[in-house]
Length: 407
Ligand code: PMP
Image (cartoon, rainbow, N blue to C red; front, side, top):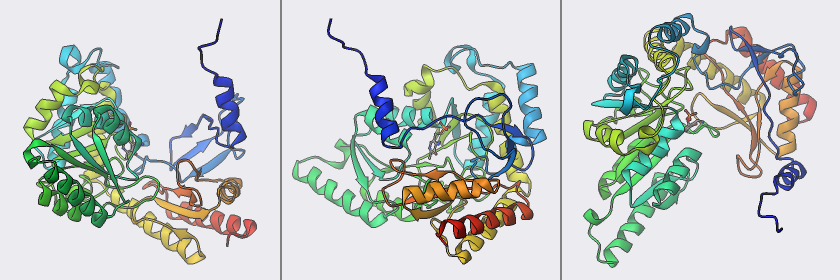
């Protein structure tokens, strides 16, 4: 019988041969200052150091370890239950979800918000529900946006990263084509979609210029605030920081980074949320967000807005960026994410190993995640790092940089 199965062994061997195979390594956290320790009894490769400083987490404010956030999750588990038990449209809707959505809408400056079971589901669910004819998408947008465009079967026009001029010329070109084909603007729905803070480059999208271009062509704008929620402005994100709440029709984000939980959300008009409740299959046919996750995110949003955690984070970001740059490292971006770009993939691995030997963790990011020749270490400070932690991190980079000849 001919084999119509899948040669998974060959796939894995190809990954191994190209040095691209990824592996999971368990992390046993110590709930303080972003440290983690070597898991006991594990056969899997883990850090050699018993304890290391983590500069590689999206838990930017350190709120996964915050007592108030943990208490909120515990209380929701005890009173509402550990799981929603059903889709929100069946019996999975609770006051914990409503409280979270009210708080998100308030900080976002929108009519309403809707929680999804992940940020990935929020992007895929929203783009497919909108059924756009054409999507204009930044070339470095997150995979969940790309997958949403594919699943929506939209014509996708990719513009240069963070380049409003490239977006504008693509809009003009596409508008000319529509005119030549005799189509009126009302015949097609256009969506411009961009991350606000880009996870691997640390860049911030030029949202104001994007909104200007969108309005010239009557397109809608959707912004993925996964890496900005809880951090920018009063916690609302870059849209709020730029005062663009009225010009961005769809604000999306995740609860899994600064908000220290799990899940995603979309914030926007009453009509948008009503449509998503009805048409977003990733919402309709998926179990509601677990109540402890919703409660933790609500509390984390409150703490993010009403504590000094954000200021602490930004102080660490400035200290670390200045230190790395003054040593001679090339640091990209202009956000809390500090990509230390070294170029060659082996150099990035060696540098990551070098700092790891000095008990500092920041992973090497290599192709295919980033383009060839731009391998980097993605350094992400947290609000819970203290000044000495940042100094230790800088020292590790200096020593490893000198040892490897990169400095
Ligand atoms: N958008 C962006 C920009 C992200 O970085 C991520 C998470 N890596 C997501 C969406 C997906 O969010 P989640 O992890 O909640 O599925």
